[in-house]
Amino acid sequence: MDQKGKWMLMLFTDILLFILALSINITPLYFLVMILSFYIYKNGNAVLFKEYDERKKQKYEEYKVVQDAAKEVIRTGNLLKKKKEL
Image 1: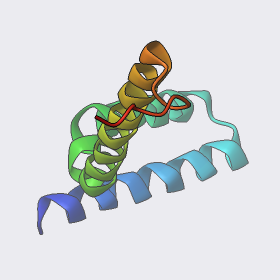
Image 2: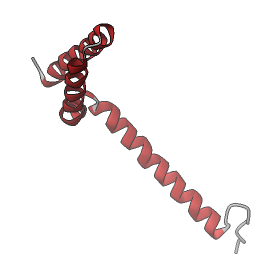
Image 3: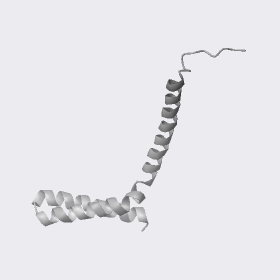
Image 4: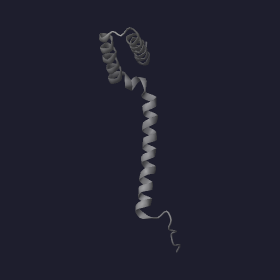
């Protein structure tokens, strides 16, 4: 089983334990679910959501480029002024 499959299985198990904990209301099961969830978040997040994180990072970088360009245009005021031709 590959890494992503292992983490997906752990996540699915955690979800089932969460539903079970809600339905039978056993307090120690809540703590088990919280510990397992934290473990999955800490160690499996990079494996499970790698593509999503890369897309999000790329979009953020594109946003920063546009934001920096907009700041430069506002700072210099060149958007509404026409350049004089020689």
